[in-house]
Image 1: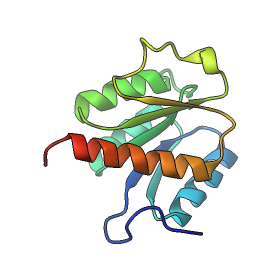
Image 2: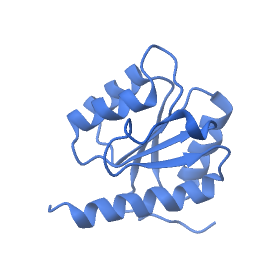
Image 3: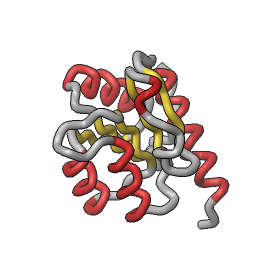
Image 4: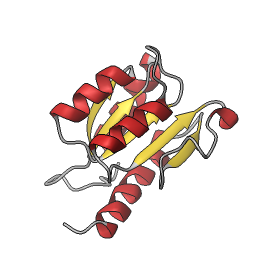
Length: 134
């Protein structure tokens, strides 16, 4: 398996997924590709992680337990980190109206291949890094 990100400075992904098996599968695959992965099962835990540790990209399911969905999580995360890249995922393509998405975000339909997600996340972070002055 080829590393997609640098081992010196891995891309820090916050994966928010309430389905345990999906979360484990995607986190393991991303880690194998060189990402530093933190996971959360709901928006409240995700926000705590965003406030306590560096995050390069948010990869969140839309349907989350606990009263805050992935769209609301992304809006709140962008209030904290305005340039944070966001990638949404859902099994229901019509679940997220484009007006609910944060600007510049991407949407991935489930089921997806974690290998493709790895490339998408790396490309998204690189594009954001190139766009935002250091």
